[in-house]
Image: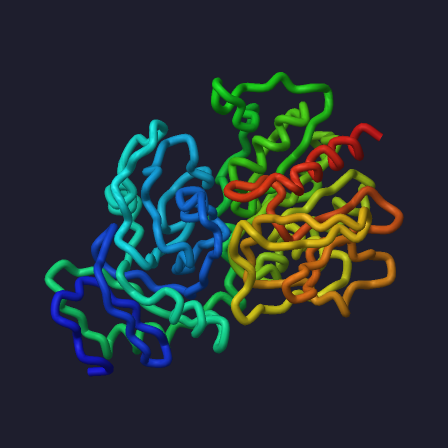
Length: 386
């Protein structure tokens, strides 16, 4: 046995290097395999756990207290599905608390059970975070069994055998299977999420795992929105005669998704249509323009990351969620760097010098997170309007 089981432990996290964290199992029973990352946000745990960009990952919250606002049907970010198309597992310092919020429809633990999210609480999340920072995001298995019986050697072996996210296309399973229209806007007190009247400008959103708040932010600019599957051809997109195209966020390795998406993105760029890429969409736009992407050691995950907009000189606090990054040294001459991370200097935005094409690595829809970069949706709308 890799480690001795602690009496009373009902949950474990077994890393590929043999390290085992033991604590209290919460949420769904069973086990889940994935890459462990940490998120530094202090709010928005429901939005985080339903972000499709976390597909095939196990998420450790660095903020110790989670669960107090419960969950509700409005704040789910993915378009459909459960933990199969979002975070597989969740790790907490403290056992999630009971819900105490007027918007709550249910408690956090019960919601995790229904979604199939395996949880682990009562461990030293600072030690886990330090390990990820020092050695990179590990492959691991998270398991929850109320009887406290675990085959630790088998769990470690399963984690070691996993090939990981590199080379893995996850956008296709995270994407919608058919196109649909969207007209819901950003949250507005006291109505909640309102329906908005669209203008004569239309946007096609290519869904690689799109978040609902991206669609809401676009709709709030007055655009008519059509969402299409990740595998949609450029010809089919252009046949809709959109005024602009958005390349959405999503999970997995951009180079793997790019095998079928990049040729279509190049055709969209050549069409002269305004294009706005977000997160995975940013990475694949960079690939289409001739740059490279690389896997990061631990990635950027949180709602408090500083990014500098080189076009304005302003520093913004933004929401981040990515494990791959654009290699800034590979950017061709026709592409300018527009945003950089002030944490590690990695690329966070690009734009073509001669066409209305730009993208950012961070999440301007801010769900959860600050609204410092929400202006980018209006910038895109202004570009469509000439």
